[in-house]
Amino acid sequence: MTLLALGIETSCDETAAAIVGADRKILSNVVFSQVLDHAVHGGVVPEIAARAHLNAINEVVAQALKQANVTFNDLGLIAATAGPGLIGGVMVGLMTGKALSAQLDKPFIGVNHLEGHALSPRLSHDLQFPYLLLLVSGGHSQILLAEGVGQYKLLGSTIDDAAGECFDKSAKLLGLPQPGGPELEKLARDAKNPARFDMPRPLIGKKTLDFSFSGLKTAMRERIDACTVDGNIKREDAADLASALQTTIAGHLSDRCKRALEEHRGVTALAAAGGVASNGVTRAMLELVAKNAGIPFVAPPSALCTDNGAMIAWAGIERFNMGQRDALDVAARPRWPLAENTVRIQS
Image 1 (tube, rainbow, N blue to C red):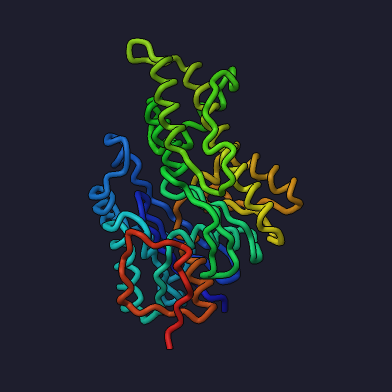
Image 2: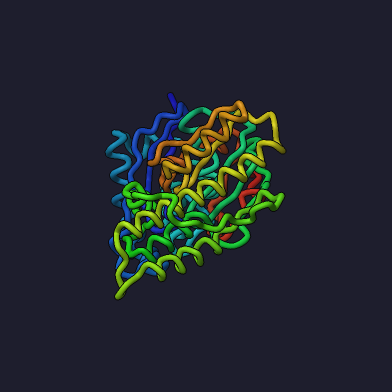
């Protein structure tokens, strides 16, 4: 019988649980969004997020089991995010996973949230190592060489803000609801003159694989202020600005991936994961980079790019198959660099 894993994810503002098989079949993938809880504050409030996770976690896990048509007894593994993330939220999911493991006498694995993203292309596409990974989200922007489970070389990272943060903060300046990235992408589709606004190109001419997005946020603020009259900005101006920003961010990401592929040949694919990887313009540019390099471009479907329990369940399965079993004293970690995330095998 195929091993079934319960994956629990609570690192930010979405309470998620999923049932995934070792055969890569996703039997359920339940996500409870807290977006309405945080909308009035214009961003995620850690204390509110932690309380919302606590209120929702039992029902979300129950729904995951129900949708998968399985019981706790059918599970062979419990996996939960142990970090990085908002520590209050991480603790809710981690403690829930530990409690279930203890009560059911099932193996437990504390998963690095970033590894959940990093291994999601293997869940969706059975991608083989080694592959070049662009991990882009609201909190992280990294280029990694994924050589195996627990084997990641950090090639480049943002020197200031993350790409997702740039999307979200710019969307907020335009008066769009949060999470802002998807809303900004929708607005950009209405652009009448997408080349109208010139945006600075970060780190242009620099021979580096690092990113920078703080300058783009400043440029957006300046251009929005210039177009604002009596506290309002015309939708036409906002759409053109959204398009300019989106194209610039996607171009910056794809340029660094192009450089990385030139320096690291022999990879099986260019992969992208994390919330920003669901952006259509970004995907299109990355597809072209991969095509020019003669390799495929792989990105999970949008439901597996944003935070979800399926990627945590799959990361747990990958580590379980390599012999890892975690004791129940695994600590919640607000920071946990992926490059330090080696496989832990208990004697």
